[in-house]
Length: 364
Image 1 (cartoon, rainbow, N blue to C red):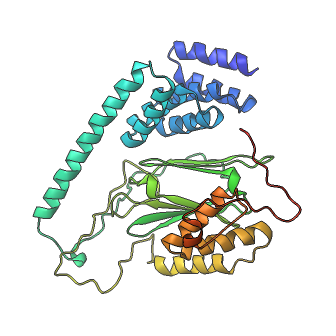
Image 2: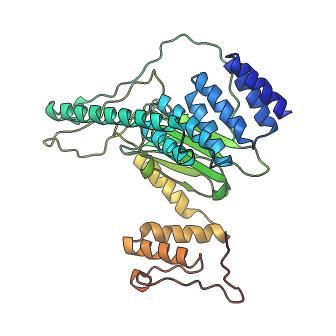
Image 3: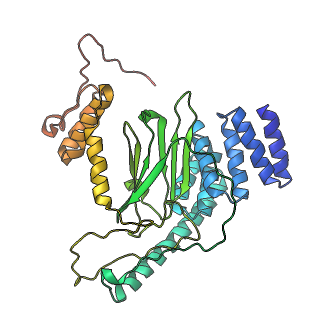
């Protein structure tokens, strides 16, 4: 049945009926959710419909199903360019170019990304020069800009309730997103960071899949972002590219960006800034401390307790201890975990299986 729907979608696409093609492909995906070509075709339909964030999500899903499909990286690169995500687009296009060396589309789009990145860098340098030359102001003089929606109330259809609830809070340098997914194995959680895109997938066998795909309010630094899968939640930390106050988690053309606070050297800051919420002020530092205390007090058992024990050691360790733990664990195929860099740094760590077991090297 999915082949008939796919054929009808292609005919609709040829006739420029992109919404119809999108709907038919969605039906085909419901029938056959593991066919990468369906996601690739729907990604192209989403691009035609200006649904660029959804196009990135479809391309990412196609890449998960078929990592060596060059067309999937082309779709992702095109959608990211439309979103002005040039760094993310370039990474995807370079991967696609390595899979299809003779395809000139990748070369042309990579050149476009390089040009856009150079323009952004030049603009940023100009803004920094203007900021440096302007008169600095005290922190009390900077007032946040709040976007007010005066549009008339409309009756809308309530969307389906997501499987997991998520919340966020922010600090000057990062935004913390919490997805309240209890008891989800880490192997079933996938998080992808773009310049201004957050993509989260939780796919547990036998349960409905959960997807959070959003264009973020501000840009982030993907290589500095991280996430942890805990027993009661998935915690995602987004490193801000600029120290600005996000009015919301998701991007909106109607949202007003809060001014960046940069006090002069003559201004002494005696307390950490607080941020406006809907009606009352929230002490985010206190909230974060309480959340960390809850995590610390969690009663875990089995593998979860052991993993938390090793994670706590690694988190509080110095650089040499971390290097020793990583090197010993990898080289011993997960059978040895040492914290002594002087002992393992100059030699290869051999595997040491438990009594009664044999270490076997698998051929891939």
